[in-house]
Amino acid sequence: LISYLKDPLAPYTDGIWLVCVYSFAIALSTLFRNYYIFLGYVIAIRMRKAIVSAMYDKVGKLSTKSLTETNSGKLITIISGDIFNVERAICMMPILPAAPLVTLLCLFYIAWGSGIEYAVITLIIWLGCLGGQAICNIYTRKYKAQEARLTDNRMKLINDLVSGIRTVKSYAWENHYLKKISEVRAKQHTTVFKHNMVGSLGFTFF
Image (cartoon, rainbow, N blue to C red; front, side):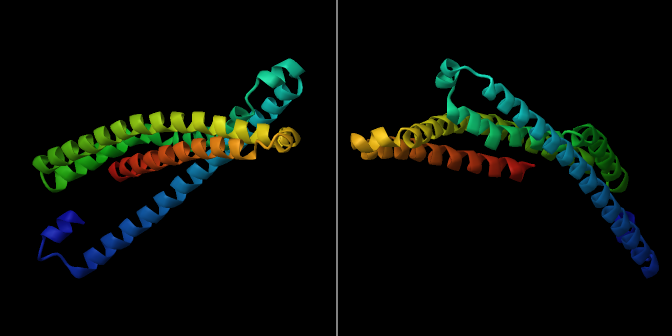
């Protein structure tokens, strides 16, 4: 296509043929890639079912003392958030081996069609975006860990409030628990905002 666009004398029918071939290749690659990701999600969901089942079996065999020492918020966080990260990693993992090959092919075709200097410029821009994405990932993991700790604390407070509602109502501790939960939720909201902002920047680099 690049060579065709550079040649003012190229016939119009060649352009139509090249566009049709390119469109077919993109459609075929999208179909295979999405099916590949779909299979990854299927495997991830099966793993999620196995992990949750194993966790429930483990909790069912805990003693009363162990149950009192276990933070219920952590269990809820594992089910709702942490396992989702495992799912996403599994479905995206097969793409990683293909990334170097795709990059080398792109640089080769840019150098072949437009010149080696344009391939070098593209490589520099790509490496810069890769570095920016790596920095964003570091901060994303940091904010995600903070959010997980705050979620654990908040879920534990809510669980204690619900399980001991009679005692809370008897001693009129509603405002006390509400204040503590609101404080944790406010901190969590700030952390989630930072996490999403950094994640958006990283996705922009991606």
